[in-house]
Structure formats: structure tokens, C-alpha cells
Image 1 (spheres, chains in turn yellow, blue):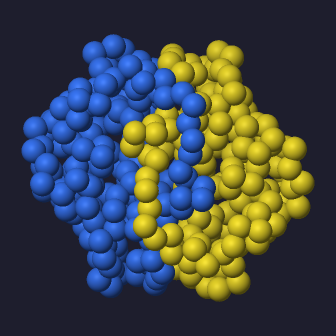
Image 2 (cartoon, rainbow over the protein chains, first blue to last red; image 1 turned 45 degrees about the horizontal axis):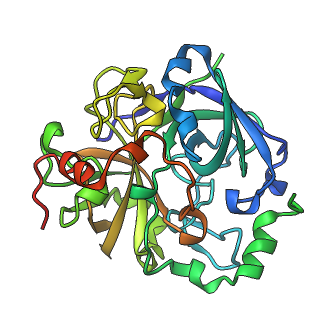
Length: 163
Length: 163
């Protein structure tokens, strides 16, 4: 049977988002939302060279998420979908993934824009966003293709007015 | 102090890659490398709607990775870089991230192309790749901007000849 996998946070993410219901659902709807990650000092050396990248992945723990559900209504649509076809936090493994714009690094602190992450979130990993690997020409975007841009903007911001 | 985070695999990834030294380092260098994920049957319902997406993220455990290092030489360059500025598996939390092309779903089995993942890898999460959120216009790609495409192709494939 499957073994468990144990991770330890490498830092903590700070943002102005203190309530899950008002946090923008994706960085695309969080422009102007500044935030930072304080990486624990013992990992500072691993941040070297990161400031060369305009965008980075943050992988983190949805520490506040409720029990997993296999079918969920996505934030952007009122139709139940398989949870793995959504970015909902109510997943079997509560792993969050955001691509944020890296503004600067000050020692062990990273400052970024486009933060859709709740204040106090444990950070698990940081990876560079590489256009060569990660900028994909999709041909199908599933149920998301049914959501028009105006609806996505309105529902995705969840009350955040933009900068 | 930081608490530990415990995850349980939701499935197992199968591929033809049985040696780490010969596995392409990114899906971009693994075109034609077919693979599949067998998601454990209890999660099958969560896969609903996933086949609408041409590309998906696989988040998995680098279960074979050695001890973490804070400075590593990336596969594509002989210069030491901070590990968080690379996609090296030798990270404090051994979390892997790949974007693969989803070919089809058969019940609890996902078939994909572009597999840069070692056979037997524990799968932790699946998310849809959404062009609206994930196709980013980067302005800087760090040290990767120093690597020309021919070098990247040659070193990234690690012996894989392509289809």
C-alpha cells in the first residue's frame, strides 16, 4: 500500500488575505496584491539566483482547507466538477500552486505581486517559472473554456477591487 | 516552529524511465515518452471532467532523490545555482512538478505524453493546466536565458532520442 510522504515547511507566506472567502482565487485576479515569503534562515543559500526570474512557482500547504471532496463546484462556475479538474483547495492532498511575480529578494525574504494566498500559509517549495518549459500552447481548457472573461474576472476577484 | 505536513499518494506513475541518469529532465524534452498514472480507485470520481484539458500538472514525490543540497549544478549548466532557482530534485521538500499532455482517461487511469518522470513515482496531486492562469509572459528567465536551445535540447534529453 502507499506510504505517507512527510514535508516540513521551508517558510511562511504573508499577505493581506485573512479570510478565505475574500481571497482572490488566482494570481491573475490578484494583481497589486503584494505579499512576501519569509524563508527560514537555514534555507537562505538555496534562494541564490532566484531574483533572475520574473515569475516563480510557490508550492504551499492549504493549511486551512476543510475535508477533501471528490466533486466540487469551482469558484468560477456553478456546476460540480471532479476535484482534480479544478484548483479547489478541498483536495485529497492539500497542495496549493501559484505563479507569482517576483518583485525582489532581500536575504531570506521574497517580495511578490499577484498573491492569492492566505496570510500565514506554510510554504513547501519554490521553483522558477521557465517560459521554455511552462508556457504551454493548450488546445483544450475543459470547463474553463465555458467561462467568459468578464464572469471569470468578477467571480475570481471575490471582492478584491484591483490596484 | 513549523509543523510537519503529511500527504498520502493518490496513485502511482508508470513510465519507461527506470534510471534517473537517463530520464529527460523536462516534458519539453520527452515528447513521445508515453506514460500513465494509475489513480487509486477511491479517487476515481475526482478525475471527472479532467479529460476536457489538453494539459495537466502532475505533482509528485521525488521518492528516489538523495539528500537536499542548497546549491546545485542544474542539468543544463555547469554553474552552481541556488536549488530554488532550479528544478533539481535535490530539494528540501522533494516535490516534483511536470506539465504533461493528457492523451486520454480510462476510468482511474490517465494516459499522457511528455513524461519526464521515473517509473513507480508516487503521485500526490493533479491539477488542470489553465492557459488563462498559467501561460505567463515572463520578462526574465534567470540563468536559463544563458542556455541556448541546442544545448538545452542536447543536455535536457539525457540520451533520449525523441520519437
